[in-house]
Length: 204
Image (cartoon, rainbow, N blue to C red; front, side, top):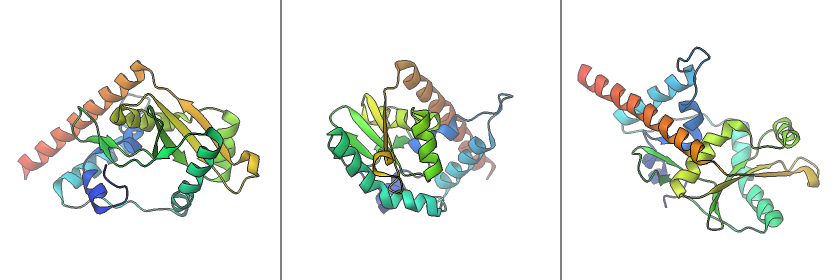
């Protein structure tokens, strides 16, 4: 296990398609062409592969809030679910090179944990919808794939809410088809990235 946030963790993810960016790798426009987000991701990963540094990403105040309250969210989840959460580091995909993920925790022997501490309006919206937000499913699928686990518990936590409304938990069990779709999309994306790398090196 490579400890999250360490220099080794940052370098282990360099140039790799990680779970948190899987949704971007699967993003296409209505006309079938790749989205600007997907194209940008390829350029960023190419830059990381060609250099000795990882591309910096600005941490917004909202993102920092999430980082600061993740431990409290996990404690609240453990209290209400009875599950003990163990630490997880960066884990590579067992078969696909340059692909991996860092779950927010491991649950029992067969699950992973994905924790979000969003803005209050976002948290309320997720609670009212009552389902795992679709935009996070690709990330959670990758986390299940790299850990070889069956389910992912999605947790949204907002300590600014009244006590009964602070925690939202939904379990997500990806289907074999969903696993296959994400792996296929990852292989396609990484093949395009490899081709870009070869073309850049050859041109240089």
